[in-house]
Length: 113
Length: 112
Image 1: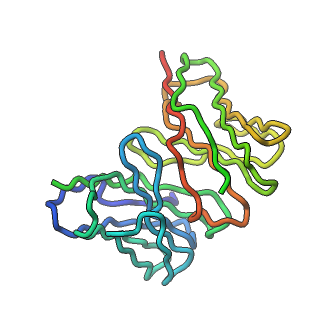
Image 2: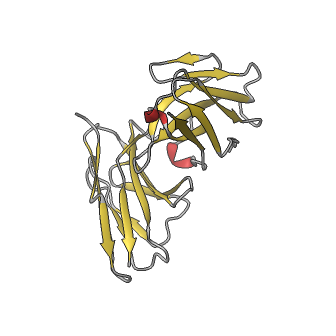
Image 3: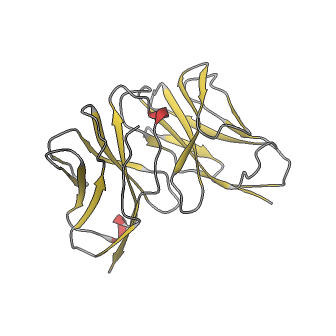
């Protein structure tokens, strides 16, 4: 079945450590996105990529980094510069940056101790 | 960007219809109305979308006001599995999904 796979589902890290969240899709979608969700809040866009080897900052990119070396993969690194990294992280994709609906993964919950 | 306004929460009894309102008074002529829902601890999923006419699919119906300043998502017979946060989003067909924001949505509570 086609879809988006995020891993790990749960992750615990010590303060000051970088952590990378994986996002893989087999939908042949060009566009991919990373969102952050805090308890009781909506989704906030961190980064998005419209095509391979290209990505754009979203509303809250500070303290995060991404790469898009392959169409299927869009990993997110939460760096030590992110002041409050504990959150639920969601990856999504769409056929391209303007058409098609958004398909989401099941999310990765990061807790920084 | 056009904004949407939704109630924070709504409660319904199981097997009864649920009508979720969304106000979008600044909607432009080329904005589509999209609905997504998010079950607990999961990513959002697509529910339905429309432009001017009412739309039906296996999950829900979307009723759009004639002036398009508001719309209503209708769940015909709520089940416990419909308990989720429902997001109403406007998107111009030329806009990137990267330009949009999901607000807090409406938390739907279904009571047995």
